[in-house]
Length: 459
Image 1 (tube, rainbow, N blue to C red):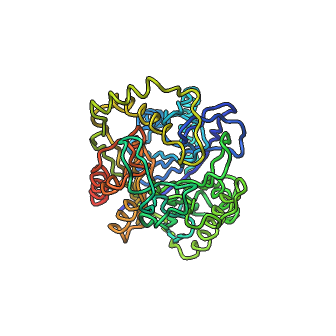
Image 2: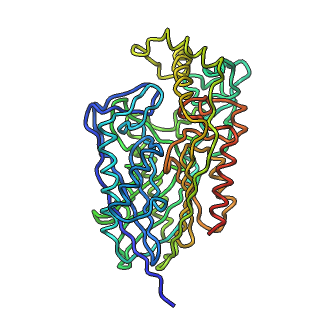
Image 3: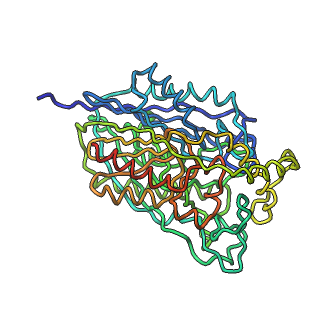
């Protein structure tokens, strides 16, 4: 009987865009005026006797499936790693280069073209760095930094839905209306899950963590930054006293309804630029560091992959809605549109932005292929889902897989926007507003999570 051999390698490539690059993630476009810290494509390659897996995490807001399919094809040509065995995800920093058109922010095509090669280089270098290794899975709960950003408001509060023209039952991020809040809509996932990777010589190779918080965002528009994802990587490297070849990675979990802006306790974090992100990242790194003393190292984990593409229906406007949207767009001067920081007071602008979204969304196919991926690494399983899923989805998957160190990496292998559970559509709120960043049918979440469970049960 042959002994399973396990190797691991990691690498990173600087992908920082030049000044002037478009930045997406907001309702309108911003342009890079200041580079606060570098952005990276970080790759972790794992290999046993039969299977090679690559996990790639990129400091960018979103990457759609067509772009990532091309990237995976290039990686396959360079490394021989099967595209089905490659998980590529966005951290979801809202301060990186724009390679996808979102709301009123277009893609920056030169940067998009450049990024394809850079992501591939990170995987190629990680594979070149393969060496005998061991791994350990772990989890520590850190509930204090993640809250539901969707709120039930007082009965007299008016939450306009710019798509339907009606009223929502909840408000997302009610900045300026904190006194009208009644309570949060749902619980969040407090788990800081991780996979630790060392060489058999006990030298650190990588640590990949997963936390379900959207991002921090404590910077001015026009800033390029990896947000708290980058700070965490630096902090954990320092605490581990790891060498310069160590690759720290923080991935985005099921955070579609979660962030750090606590509207019920708005004063509990400092307000200065970057201070909150530094504080949170340092605390996560510290708690994870202390939990490492309890992990159990495995020297010969086996690897396997399950991958599937589901056909999912797209929500589109009716013929009447489309005609109304065309009239609104025809009379709108988008070039001079200015939005307030608070959603309150932007109702007319939102109506116009989302009217444009209906026209563009109508050009989409009636169905899309949604990628679902599960990676088994010894006793642990990592799920990859190509959208912004709510905490409820991640908690459900963890509860269904209590004994296998499971966690979900979102914004992986594609981007289908927000994928709320069906009952959230009844409440409304920003994440449910039909547009190019929220366009799957209401039952898509249940279909997708059940399909993920089927993949996991195939191991």
